[in-house]
Length: 414
Ligand SMILES: Cc1cc2nc3c(=O)[nH]c(=O)nc-3n(C[C@H](O)[C@H](O)[C@H](O)COP(=O)(O)OP(=O)(O)OC[C@H]3O[C@@H](n4cnc5c(N)ncnc54)[C@H](O)[C@@H]3O)c2cc1C
Image (cartoon, rainbow, N blue to C red; front, side, top):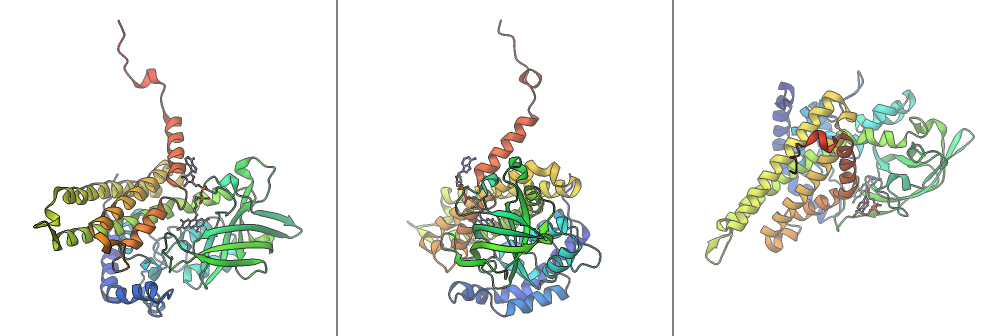
């Protein structure tokens, strides 16, 4: 295994850091005040920054298999990982480079499954940054971490499909520029459980689509991709909108998730780096009972453990990226589930430590810690709770397990 960065990745890292120093860091405070105090989704300068990033070639770095002539700098997962990590330090800033969820995972799904017409109509504008999108899977009425529970119906009617369902916690759905949903629903309730569901493209402005409200998580709004509750009531779309084949819904879901989880994990790791820096600074700045807080063993242990866990997490994600690049999603399935659990839990622990070391201030809106804490907690639920991935990891472990007699040297009892 070789995780050393390619020359191209190193050059782009340098370029990205310089972009942050010139354009993002000087405006970061203004951006955060706009979101947190003034309830603005994104200040006007964000669109200017996107145009500048595109001009400088820092665009669509997260989509590996772009076609010839598609806009963007395609990178392998391992090459993109350090860039995603840097973006993660500044929560939400991946938007500047068109590397933001849920659009990137949707680009990956479209790149894999879309026919020529769908590519032209939906993928290219996403790659250009001219529209936004959402992935609608989770349902209000059923435990959606078991995808076979999903009940939204996608019923064939002549040349059309008619969709009825109630989705919620759909990231990006409440953004005014969200032009379409990739909806997961049931096309054939009689088929085997893994073949009942399909994915279909539903334009947001189709009659019967209703985004009823914006949701927050632990009080945090996702400003760059606002979360929505969505009703689909007798929504009629052409049968040409089906993505892939009927019954392939879960396969499409998996395709978008492999690289997307690597990106998400690397952004979380970047956010953790920032949290460790904040803990270090705060612990040295204040004193209790005649001693600098940083001088207490318990505080040093919290910071040291954060460093150990973060290094472990980064190495796991790099290995997963390396495997995905070399062998594709099928051979990296267990690793992809493992990083989803390990990084979400590490992020949650480190954010909790930072929250604690900062005292009351950690929970205020004056630092990025409260936001980090809520997104770290969400990460343990979103895209499948820990338990669902652990179950999957155990099942793969069980498949690979050798019979006891072959794997252990058992001493005779006499
Ligand atoms: C911030 C955020 C953004 C999101 N964005 C999207 C999005 O863009 N699109 C989308 O479709 N969804 C999205 N989701 C939804 C998310 O994917 C679901 O919440 C998640 O899959 C869990 O489904 P559920 O909420 O129905 O929980 P349930 O399925 O009801 O599960 C609840 C709990 O049951 C327990 N549980 C479940 N299975 C097991 C098991 N096998 N063993 C032990 N315990 C178990 C766990 O404690 C679990 O947390 C988002 C969620 C959040 C928080």
